[in-house]
Length: 157
Length: 338
Image (cartoon, rainbow over all chains, first blue to last red; front, side):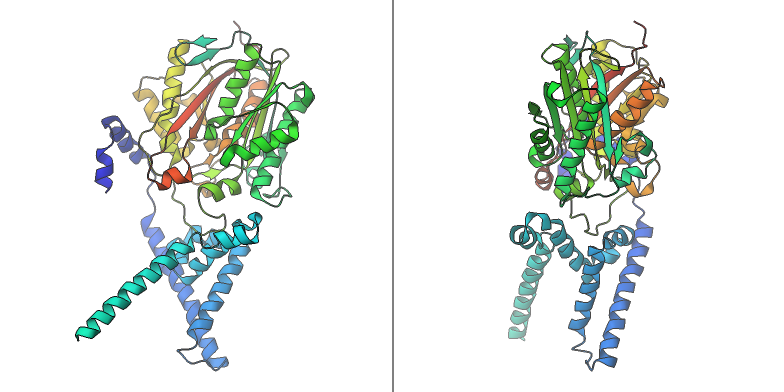
């Protein structure tokens, strides 16, 4: 794909792009990966802690504690987004904060806050899933295909 | 009057009678804070949306520039303004408040100099006595329209730039005391096939080169004619690229005299990545910092080259590359001997 795009460029454009690339500061990949690994892990650690709390003090089982744990994480993420802190943590942590469920909550909350000025229905309602929408759509599509495959294979076996 | 292929020379040398710069909280922490007329501590500026806040910034800049020119708004013949918002609402809504006959213009971040060049042309051709040229940008409003919601946690690469929250305005007149506009070069759209909206500096640098090269050719000026050549918002990345491109194309502008507003406005703050951007960047730095220093006599001749990336969120998503433009305006202080 990238090569195909390059072919359409004139030699002058190609030459310039090479020059521009030399001036592009490198993304600090090792630092980004390390931070993402530890922050992502830390969020999971918090999640595990919350699960343990639910099991120990609120009579949940390992199976039923999952849903309230996710709800608490979503609440925390939404709160941090509303307070204007989440995006700052995310600039530092990168994928560490966007991959876990907290990132999903942040994408919905931030879009809802941003479009509040355009009204509740068309603003908040219409835009809240602007970013999260595609995650939901492709999540459902992927689940459907996997479900279909599973059914096919179990039918044969 | 046309000069060369795509430039204007202004024999009457229209005067910048008043100029003003308004900034937001982040600009107030920058090294140029002293040069703003008004700085706001609140990004919302007491309004209930980013868009309304941007409109207030622009209105304030206009009123301040008219006031500093010693005029009343009824005396201003035309108002030329533009901004980054869809349908240039900040400019149109400010024009509603000001009630000055209005021409909306769009050149993305090059709007500031597009407006100033046109204002000088109108005054020079006696189509107007006083023209107000202004532009604005707002970090929240621009992020919302071009990228993600402001509170969305996405990591930006080191080539990204920070949209300036600010507005700048200038009143150009046919007589009076002040800095004078001697010429302008209208840029052509240059597209080097760059597609990364998080690397605008690299996309816009060739447009700046094209305009600077043409300016010197059209006016047949030596490359060291200006005490200062300023680009709009190329940032650190674009500044480095243009510094390499200029000598490569035999435009021997002394590189120590070449600066970039996007690099100046926030100094070395690492949180803005490559530097400042947006219509407000070149507008506030020029109408605040640079013109003030020129009035103090720090420089006699200056060429301001405002650069603009003419993309939209839709064009980018449809895989289009980023077309860019740059307009140059030459400003001289009165002391310059003819």
